Every structure is written in C-alpha cells, then in structure tokens.
Image 1 (cartoon, helix red, strand yellow):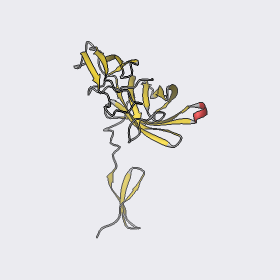
Image 2: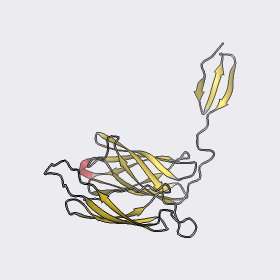
Image 3: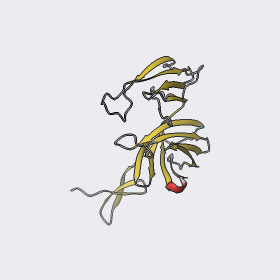
Image 4: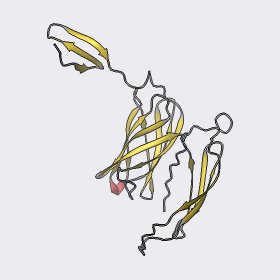
Length: 212
C-alpha cells in the first residue's frame, strides 16, 4: 500500500493519522553550510530571445565575507546601483531606481558550492531577463589565466544589402593578461570606435557589453 508523502519544514513525512513517520530529509543542494566570501562578479543579462535595447545589459557585483553586496547594472546607456544582503542560502532580492523608467528588480542566487557564479533574474516594466555573472578568479602568480595573450577579431557585416545596416566588417584587438584582465579596442562596420575593459571567466567567457 502506498501513501502520498507530505513535505514540511525541510522533511518528508508519510503515514496514517495515528502514525506519522519521517523517512527522509530534503537537501539544500549546497553541499553544506554556505560561507560568504569577498569577491567580484561580472556578467550579462538578457531575455531568452536575445539582446534588446533597454532589456539587456551588464552587471558588476562585489560581495563581502559578511554576506553583503553592492553592484551596478548597465542598460539603455545608463548605470543603476544596487545593494543588499544574501540570506543563509545565498539568495537575495535587490531593487534599483530607474527614475522615470520605473524600478529594476534583481533576484540573485550565489552558487553556494564554490562561490564561482551568481545567477538569477533581472526585471523591469513588462520584461524579465536571465542573469549570469562569473567570479573573477585569476591571479597572475597563483592562478594565471590560460587564455593570456593577444587576439585579432573580425565582426562580419550582415551582408543583407539593407542600407540602414552597416555592411562593412568590424575589426578589433583583444589583450588578456595573466591576471584575467581583458582589454578590447575596435572599430565597428560604421566606423564607430569602441573599447571595453573587463575580466574573463574561468571557462573563457567574455561578458562583452559596450554602450554606444
């Protein structure tokens, strides 16, 4: 005979009205108590359909050993500061005023296994975007970036013959230091000069976001 288990207070119960038995515990998935650390995280947020002006951007978050954090979200050509405190499970919600454009809400979750990333959601008026920010891990002495070096980049033109779209290729140069610091300089297909300074993740991901 089977019974339907009941979940309450982090435990799983099963039994009759007169005999209630605990037969398991629900794990938090964190692999033990979470210990906050002082670190920097840099990443991007965008909707599932891709990047869109005013609905996607970059995020920079600085955390402390006390579990507090502060950061800035950049979108639509502007930067919005936010701050807060993570709970015992590494979760938090923060808001940032966008003045005439309403409020930006950030739901954040630290990877409590190794503090390697912060993920979550960023939402505004009528939109919600996925957020992923990686921790700055590299150190030129103790943990140098294996991607260090200089690279030449090409951004192919669309080739769609649309006169409203720049048809020429864009080009650029990228330098990554052993400390994981990244510097980019380039020229877009419409001859607009662009540049960015950021950090690269442990997996080689580059959070490429430029205000035009």
